[in-house]
Length: 411
Ligand SMILES: [Zn+2]
Ligand SMILES: [Zn+2]
Image (cartoon, rainbow, N blue to C red):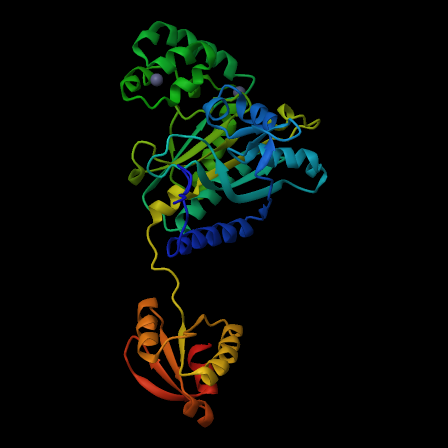
């Protein structure tokens, strides 16, 4: 038997109904914030992610699905979408379009991580990017939009964490301060962190190893080291969030290891997800477009929601049930049922037809499918212009004309 590849999975009904609902909620929220959908290829040149995500990251160094195309080009299944969106922004000169470019995406990403609960090698993200403004107003709007999506999707009890990671002006000095503080405590940290002290000290701050936490908590905070531009920017973001009644916590350890991330970073965590409890992460990346070859600055901010984890958290679905189940008795009735089903469907009614079942089996099936109504069509009924309509919940059965049927079901 051939099975799905390790770390991938089939999404089946009734679960797909939850996925569709979450995505419909997201699309509706995006619409009201004037975000428009972008669909980029799943396959990109490998160098896009090497430059846009960073060679030093675990994602690029260990987790990407990379292979040589037949012409020798190294290509990669996208491990995230921001680099692709920015590539498209540059390639299509979206900077020349009026206003801030607000783009959203929904789709699969690929990372060869160790499979665990809620983590898959093909996973889905709902994300957005606002490109072309460095205003703290945009930061607050993006964060508000995220909170709106999660709330309307039915997520309860989540916590919004925010931070500022400074910019090219103030961060290098902080990183040096952090590095020298780390050198004196490095022996008490995990192996990865000992390496990070030299390669990327900021990454120590989001180490998840429990024994490291007490040491990390004592390290200098970026928030005490922000410059005269970054500090008011962060304070303005907070003022906007407060004004809009959005609760948040400041977590100075919330950083991104890549140089082009700057100022606002944010994350939403949820208790039900355990140690790896993040539902989404986001932040400002004002230097990313330039590092991907843009000739014009394109300050941006974005986020991505882990859709697998969000769906897992907002719970189960009973799925969609047929509004009506047609049970024709015989071939002539089946011919008639085909046309009737079409007319009902055109009115938005979901219809299932028992194409080749005896009445008893058909009614059993209607019951198992959870149909709201069953309609029995015999030759006599059709000749008389009347059908037997059964309410599957109450068990009531009555004779209805075609018009009565439409007014009962099709409204
Ligand atoms: Zn560590
Ligand atoms: Zn700064």
